[in-house]
Image (cartoon, rainbow, N blue to C red; front, side, top):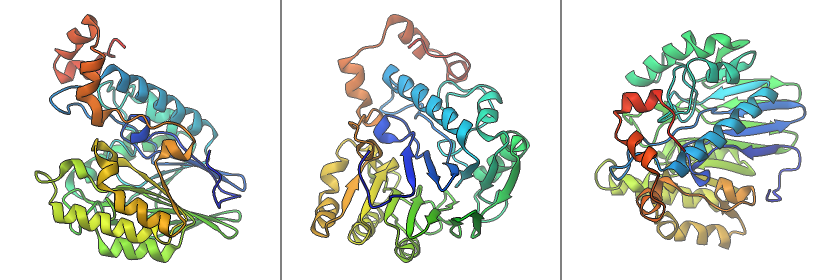
Amino acid sequence: MLSTTLKHIHIVPLAAESFGVRSMCTYVETAGVKMLLDAGVSLCPKRFGLPPHPKEFKAIENCRRKIVEAAEKADVVTLSHYHFDHHTPSYEDWLCNWTEATGTARQIYEGKITLIKNPKEKINYSQRRRGWLFKKTGGKFAKKLEVADGKVFSFGDVTVGFSEPVPHGVENSALGWVLMTSVEYEDEKFLFAPDVQGPMSQHTLKLILEEKPQLLMIGGPPLYLSGFRVDEKQLQRGLRNLKEIVEVVPYTVLEHHILRDEKWREKTGFVFEKAEEAGNKVLTAAEFLGEENRFLEAFRRSLYAAEPPSKDYEKWMRLPNSEKRRNKPPI
């Protein structure tokens, strides 16, 4: 792992786009407090007209195992919003989430203090429904289930703070709102900012800068959606705001939506240049751990061309999605 300015807060990314999956799941340990942030992981069921490549399923299987192992140690689990790459649902799904019915969620949330995004306020319809389902299923196994929006919790000398709900991207995003989480001990602070997409929101930018973390993990803008799902001007605003952040934050772990574009690095060159000028670093989660990036979804087409799957896998590919969810792929 990269040597950072944080000496007391131990941070281990467990699942992320640079590991070949959709996630920002991170394990944090400090002063005896063990936390699991956003314990979910997913694959995109169809990209470039193709289901996940066998390598993607091997990646999610590995990441899911790491998340479950971390949950065995954790005292606290957080949930920033109700997308399935940020929390674990309670139904069988081997296509997107690599979950058993109830069992996988129970392994993660049972006996934990679970701090969640309010499922009734500042939330869009689909996440409101998922939040209701979570409370009835995986959440019922928690030792304690508590709404965290805008609250600060103390665990001994460790302070865990949650932002007000901020937009999942632009202001008034149809995708709803998310919570950012800060972990502070002594004079160190780690800030976890999932799905803020840059941030695109100027208010979210202000909140991040006010936190003054030494280490930030942030979800970048979805460059791969430019022109048909997200306006290019909004994406550029997200990149400009990210540039402003890396000028002042010593270490930024840049992850999630931004890495689903195979040309993400060349499109963000000016962000890296600004960080370097300031003496700061920008890394992916894999690079933070000293590992090679394993971008898979962004290169799904070339993966299929370079490593064609087996006949059994091709047969599985022809199943309807409802069948794929109930049957593990032959990897």
